[in-house]
Length: 368
Ligand code: PEP
Ligand code: MN
Image (cartoon, rainbow, N blue to C red; front, side, top):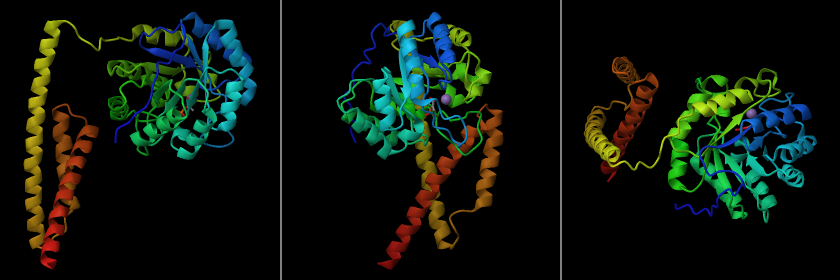
């Protein structure tokens, strides 16, 4: 299905078109002093867009759920005293009206809201006729269509200054990340909607300070457009997401250390070498495809054979053996266990599908 979004540049005056576009500020606005002091320090290091959550979607009840509209005048002070743009999350129609009335410059839709088309549609309806940039976070579940659907709903309401925020995806499995980045999903979004800016949220991906830099670097290496980074004057004492927030001075050194590589290479020598290397990769990919084709043919043969001898498709002990052996081998050649499990699970699933198809075809033929 073709995606037609009408997207215009964010049009934030005085904001350079230089990558990365940076939004920084606390997870939550807590007090007037905390908001203003954080903004003062961020302004000093050249940050132009201040983020702060006023209405906080919390996983469990009886935790701090944000100061609500009481924080709007604090954000207004940030605008007036430091000339920064302000951004906050809206999750329902009431939030939209209050944020607009309070003069907030940019709205974002949170991950839990994006996952709910009814909620997104209500927000979209409330935004009809308003000209304001809206950033849409990815839904908590790894579903690119749900993300695109939310962007379409907002766009259909006439909002053209749109961006997507990549904040990672929930997984049940334990991982070093709070929300797994699943980079292939924002990459796919970029492929399908090339002029949509993508802003990475390393804070919510990581859940702790440790990996924030490497996630930012990766986002820049993928040529994404911006970063939204939770920043607090006293991170350990933050009322929400304390472990993942950094200080303005940590943010300053993070941004200084980011390496921005050039997406468009002009040097002819570099270009030729790259072309050659890409060509080699293509040749290996061709070989991989051939091998997969041959492997599936054998799987089908096995399917036929099992059918003739009345054996079930799946023999778990055999599958366990395959996986164990390949994980061991993978370790020796520098391939991670996570990768081997993903790769062989996908190949195995496809083989089973081929076998099932063969068995069903044979059944149908017998019925004729
Ligand atoms: C946030 O940005 O503080 C937030 C609640 O994010 P998310 O919707 O990504 O969980
Ligand atoms: Mn947060």
